Every structure is written in structure tokens, then in C-alpha cells.
Length: 346
Image (cartoon, rainbow, N blue to C red; front, side):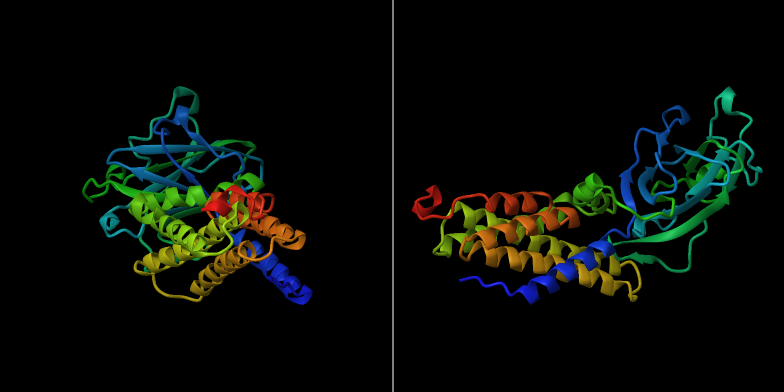
């Protein structure tokens, strides 16, 4: 019979709250595309909030972004590139366009402005590779810093940012394509919907990094196969047990996925204290998985059902189980667990 001690439950809750606050300290990922003209610039609704926009540039290509900023508001843009060896010769550049800006640097001939925007000031910054790659613990991922603009808005107006390849800046480097990240803002926060969709967004980031979709999804596939086998070999073959067990193994798959991505990123970036943050996240998802499996394979009392529902809700907010896991955990708390249920005949 599953037993839960009040003191242990409180400790788990405190740990979850602590780790959830840490998980919120990350950029909201977005994928660029279809913004090769300033008229179709990707609009950033809140430039003070931290965003990480992942794009791919081809030679002679320019990608545009727009955002509104009040007088004196902070405009903070950082241009990064991937750590993939294929991007070693890639040097993306950044330009900020807006009224009241003091023009500096050479504006690429490929940054085409309509007549209504010809009078905008232009601050161009050319990409310079940092000495070392940087490890991002919350994704996890890695990147190389290239350029930065950090100023106060001279006017309340709409501003534009453009990212263009090194070949369009009149540099001597050969025409090359590459992967870049435009980081916007400093206020690190997730909305409710962004927390829920974060795992799906991160999968897009991993594929952007050059990983195959099959490898990214492999831990989840393996986990579900193992979950079905564990359920099949068990004595409690009920829908409550099946849904809860599969949910738990999906949480474990998230733990394995984060660990795998950490190892992948550390093959491109140096080891640092940030790695321990990732390891804490790995343990957190693993604890969710173990707790889910134990609850599902124990007695289905009111307390156990309530804990499984809470576990699913926490997992949903923490991005564990690829959305399906939390749904299964919450569903399990409502499913039958008597031997007369359909699955008891398997």
C-alpha cells in the first residue's frame, strides 16, 4: 500500500516550487521565417521580455524584426550564432533602425527600406566571435556571442532590427549560410501558455541545432515501450494504472532527454557551474517520473488520485512529459481502478 508522509510531501512541494522558479529563468523561444522583407517583419510584442528567436540566414539574405518602445525604454538586442562546426565561418551582423538613432557602421545594401522609412537612423554592429562558446543550462543548449546593442530608446516609436549575413556587409569572408539567434529583452518570464508549449518549442530548437527529429523523440518512444511492458508484467492491469504508468515514464523520458541535450551541448561548450542547474532539472523530472509510477501502481485511494492530479498539473507547468504525460496523469486520477475495468482482462 502506498503511504505518503506529510513531512515528505511538504518537502517535495517546496522542492517543486524552488525548481519551478528556476525553470522560469529562460528566454521564450521563437522560430523565424517569412520575415525576409521589412513589410513582413516578425513583430515582437514586448521587447522588454526575454525572447530567443532562432533563424537561418542564406547568403545575401536579410531577416527583419519590429517592436514598439517608449521614450527611455531599454532596447537590448544580442546576436548569437550556433556552435555547430558547419557555422564556423558564419558571421551574422545586426542593425537597429529607428527615429532619433545616431547612425553608425556600414548599412548593408541588401537592407532595403521603403520610402516612408528612409529617414530612420541605423546602428549597424558587425559580428565578432567570442573567445568561447556559452552553455545555456535551462534548454539546455550552447551558443557563441557575436554582437550586442543596448541603448535607451530616443523616442516613443516603432523600431526595426535586421540580421544579415557577413557577405552583405562588404566583408572579405566568403558567402556562407548559417544559424543565428536574436536575443531580445531582459525580463525573464513565461506566460501560462508558454510554459505549456515550451517542450514543443524546445524540440524545434534542437532540430534547428542540427539534430534529427528521430533522435530527439527517441527517449519518449523508448520510455513508452518500457512503460507498456512494465504495465503488462504487473498485477494491477487497470486503466488507472496504465495511464499513470505511461505518464510517469514520459516524465522519466524528459529527464533522459534533458540529460542527453546537456551532453550534446557540452560537446560544443566548456563545462561550468551552470551544468549543475541542468542536473537539478534532470533530477526534478526523474522525481516526477518515479512518483507518478509509484502512485499509479499503488492503491487508487482518494489521496493517491489527488496527488496524481497535482503531479500532472505540476508537470504541465514544468514542461515535463511532452504535454501528453501531464494529460495522462490527470486523466489517470479520474479513471477506474477496479478489477472489473476493461483493462483488467488483459
